Length: 108
Image (cartoon, rainbow, N blue to C red; front, side, top):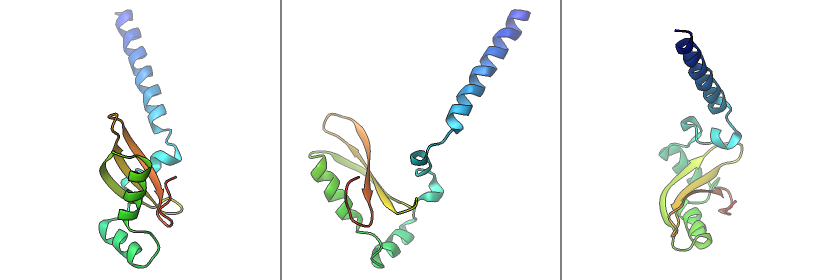
């Protein structure tokens, strides 16, 4: 009976430790918070006002940096200064999130 409780306590401690690590969010992870993403309308407004380059510019610059990569998704994120996250699949099969400065189009 004591062994069961010890095992249960060990499992609970491991879960608590894993949860603590998961809640230790870095600044980059916060960028993926859905509340930090621009909606499609907000992104269009930012582009039309000249605050950000079009997503096409970001995609083209990423494709130059990663020739042959397949673009999976593009998001405009607000975190201090705006940036694009261009999600790609490389020719080697690696999925990479590439940050692009939304004001300049420069791959970061």
